[in-house]
Length: 318
Length: 318
Image (cartoon, rainbow over all chains, first blue to last red; front, side):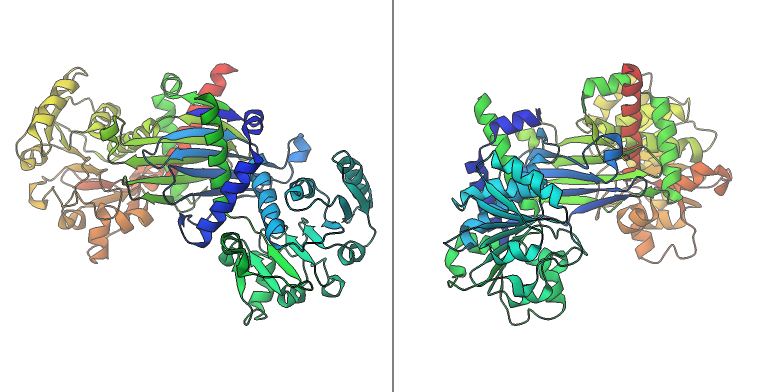
C-alpha cells in the first residue's frame, strides 16, 4: 500500500485528467452506474466537530474509494486548519488497500472547484464581461482559478461581509492576472456580472431575485448542509434552467431544497449535471435565460479524483 | 500521521491491555456511552466480495476509529488471503488523522478472540475437563490460545466437516501444549466438553439441544451475518443464561435471532456482555446451568483495540 503525501499528490495532479474523470463520474452518477451508499456521519460536542465518511465506486472501475473528511471549528485555537481529510483507494477486484492519499482536504476542495468549472463550461452564457463572486474565502480563490477552463474573462467583482477581506482577496488574485473590484453591496456584484459563483456558508439568502439580470448564470456551492441558503427561494423557483449535482441531495439540503419543499418547483424540470454533461442539448439557453447550478457535493467526485491521482502516481512509478 | 505495519502492531501489542480496554469498551457500549453509527457496507459482484466500514468512538475518548474490512472470496485464485483490512485512529479533539494501522485483518481476528476469552472468563463453569471446538479454522486456532486466560485446561476435542483438517489442527496446536482429539461426529465433541466454542460459517444448525450436558458453556462466534446459524434454535431458547454482545445485532442476525424472531425468547431476559462484565452477579450460574454467549462483533471492539495499539506505539516512541 502506498502512502502519498499532499506534495506528491499535487505534483502528480493533472487538471485535465481530473476534469475528464469527474465529468465521467457525474455522468455515471446520473445514469445510476455507481454504488454510493448514504454518507456516514460522526458528530462531536466538545470541542465541536464532525467527520463525514463517503465511499463507493463507479461500476466496472478497478477501484473503490473511502474518504474521511473532518471539520473541527475551534482548531484555530490550536493553530490547526479547520478541515482535514484523507482518501483510501482500494481494489474492487481483491479488496486490498492500494493507496492512502493524505490530501488534508485538498482533493475535496479541488473536486468542488472542478464541479464549478464543469458547470460554467456547459451552462454559462457565451459573452461574459465580468465574473461575480459572493464570498472571498479559500473556495472562492480556487473556483476563480478553475473558471479559466470556462472563460478568458479576467474582470471580477467580489462581495463578502468583510470589505477588508475582499481587498486582500483582490490583491492576491491580481498575481494570477485577475482584475478584482471589491463592492460594498452584493447587488452591485450580482447585477453587473454574467457568471456568478457563490461560496459563503450563509444561512440567510444573500442574492435577491430582482438583482439578477437576464442572461446570467449562477453556480452556488455554499449550501452543502441543512439550513444553509445563499440564493432567494423565488430566484431558484424562477430560474429558466435549474441544474443540480444530485436531485436527492439538492432537494433535501441544497439551494433547491427551499423552493422544492415550498412546492414552487412542481412544474419545473430539475436537471442533473451528469445529464447535461452527457448531452449538453438537454438544456439550451436563450440569450436572456437565467440559469442556476446547485452543487452540494457528491461522493462520485471524491471517487473520480482519488482514482485519477492514484493512476497518475502508479503510471509515473511504473 | 503514523503508518504502522502489521509486524509493528504485533510487536507493540499487549494482550492484557487489549483485554482490559475491550472489556471497558463492552461496558461503555452496554451503558450507551458510545457513538457507533450503523455499519457501512459495499457489495461487489464480479469477483464477489464486500467491504464493511465500522466507525465511532467511546464517549470522552481522545480518539475515534474508522475501520475498513474486506472479504473477497475468490482471492485464493490470485494467491491472496480472503480478508484484508485497516484501521484509522483519528483525534476526536481536532479531527486529525493520527495513525493508519495496516493490520490486514489481524486486529479484527484478535478483538473477536478477546471477546471469546472475556465470555469464557465470566461465564464458563469452574470445572472444565475438556474444551470443545466446532470448526478448526484460523478463528478456532486463535480462540483456543486466548482461552488460556479463562482456563488451565489443555485437553481439547475438535470436530469440523473435514477430519483431515481437524488432524492438521491437532498437530499444530500440540506445539502450544494442547492435547487435541479430532472426532468424527459433532455429538461427541459437544457432549463431552464443558467449554465449547463454535467458529463455523454454517448456515444450518450443527449443535443439537439434546447433546449439550448440564453445566456447559457455549460461545458462538460464527453467526456474524444474516442466514448463518450454528446452534439449534431450541438450544438457544432453552439456555438458562443467554448473553449477547449486542441485543440489537444478535436479535437481528446472530444465533439469538432465530429463537427471538420465532417468539421463543419472550419470557427470557437476554443480557448484554457489557452488563455481565460490569457486574458478574447479573448472571449467577448453578452447577447444572447451560449458558450461551452469542458474539456477532461490535465496532466498539475495533475502537478499543485500535486505540490500545496506538497508545502503546505512542508511549514506546515518546
